[in-house]
Length: 267
Ligand code: URA
Image (cartoon, rainbow, N blue to C red):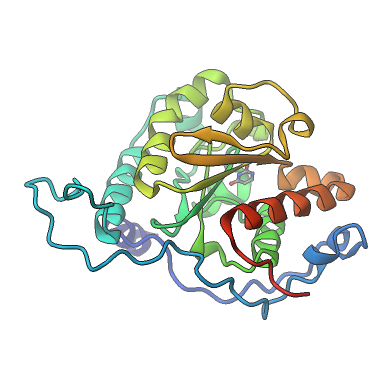
């Protein structure tokens, strides 16, 4: 953990790892979600997923290393440094007394600091709290299948949550906790500057859009958050309990891919 933390402070945001070797949850095998069921390790990676590389960035022209030169987006290294700094601040955060006292560690976020798409969930669960990475438990494994079905890997997109600490017993985040954590979330959004944000579940949707509508009402529409186009869909945990919702989620992913101009992988 120490080694990983020191790499993280140095700006490393992910390590290559073996393709997930998990069984498709049986529900994914249903005819209701044929495309999710078709997700395999060999699913091709959609080309042009990462923002087209900017022309080689000139050396920063300001005294602040993390300020973009006029008219230039932040470089990869600047984003890595900003995220590493934020992660360090998050690790020391005690704004939510109960969460700070009960967490094993904070769960900041993972993925590509230059991702076109950011996925936002609710809060870490027990597995995430133990391992320090978002979406790696059962719901996370299903999310990883969905990502693969889209033709991507987890490392190509950016994944984080409304909260960076696990609420005890996996209760819903309170409004106060979400407000306390908002500075970190907004810091991640401002740094990655995604073109698209997907809100997974009603907690993410409520906090990003300020709406108490159900996901059933919010999905299939584009919203805006800064420059990002925002789409809402059902949380993967909901899919584990309600496999029939996999089809609508896949339809939402197709809507996202279409808007991004990315061809869905062939089945
Ligand atoms: N559920 C979430 O919303 N986020 C996680 O990181 C894990 C489960």
